[in-house]
Amino acid sequence: MHYRRNKILCIIIVTILFLSCNYKTIIAQTQPDIKSPSALLIDAGTGAILYEKNPHEKLEPASITKIMTLILAFEAINSGKVELTDVIRVSERASQTGGSQAFLGLGEEQTLETLLKCIIIASANDASMAVAEHIGGSVEGFVKLMNEKAKELGMKNTNFTNPHGLSSPNHYTTAYDIGLMSRELVKYPAFFKWSTIWMDYLEHTDKQRDATMLANTNKLLGKYEGLDGLKTGFHSKAGHCFAGTAKQGNFRLISVILNSENSDQRFKETVELLNYGFGHYSSVQVAQKGMVQKTVAVEKGHINEVNLIVPEDVNLLVEKGKENNISTELEVPDILFAPLKKDDTVGNLIVKQNGEIVKKVDIVVSEDILKASLFEMFKKVFIKWFKL
Image (cartoon, rainbow, N blue to C red; front, top):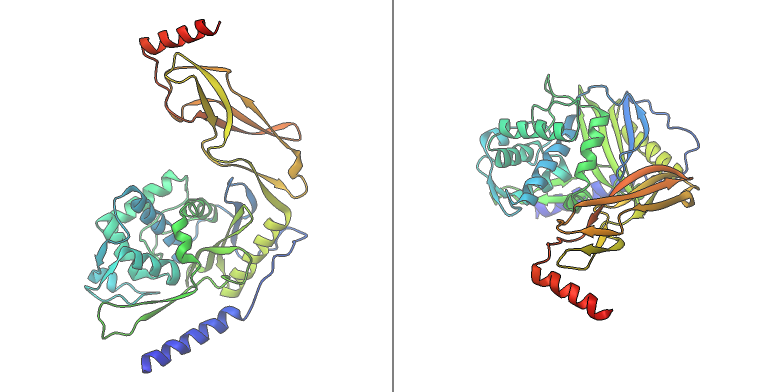
């Protein structure tokens, strides 16, 4: 009865905190006035920078570090290296990690899915360590993977020394680099399964312990239209940090605020950045992944024709009111010759704005085209002759 009463009280308190303030999307008339030392606003689809302030200044990111931890976790899941159902035994090192925690006990066993939930919702450092040990074999092995992935993503001013973000002399990144890894994380739909949960509970394997409340550290959830992630961070050296993302229609923005003086400032400035982005820009989908752009003839192939497609969504960031000034042209041959492999590039989709080329996108074949056998070639010639 005592546990149930405390649980209900916690729900009431957290609900009041979440409903105490709401932010509306408004059109910002001028560039954002950001007081925090470093900030960034980018279009998640194209990577275009809409606002920046000291974007390459090296700063400690605190728990924003966990964005990279999550990227590696989802990458490992997608590759089949690990599964969400994997049972992970919490090590002494993980259980003794300080800062924000899920209060995992030594030897406690939880699934990878549960630990990811603890990281995403409650920013649990102990869960981050347990996941790192499971995927990397050791914390040190995982940190090596973190830095390798950072290099792969083009994060030139980043170095990680741990998977959780607790202060460390050589642990740093920049607003720009955080934008790069945030763009990578939002590619995983599974992330949003948990990032939009504002409160949950962790049931410990030791049933004599009360469940641990997991309260989301993202205080803009439910208060800003379309906001569904990413990650907060705080410690005395990093200040108050927040990498946020919101999607309105097909337009997703990513904002970064680093080293704010207080928690309210980081969220208010995030709102200011997002209002500016959504108020002044829109994302136009020029072509959808897999959309057939043209069907062309095939010579000497086992098929007579093949569809040409774009291998990924093609979006263009434009100022509001200028969405109709976009046109496209295809640069592809009228005939293709076998053999060709699926996704071989055979031309370009040219995207123009006001008649000026702003983007070139690969056009690829939609399937393998094998070279026709002698029998198939004879058959084609015979049919062609017979039609004459």
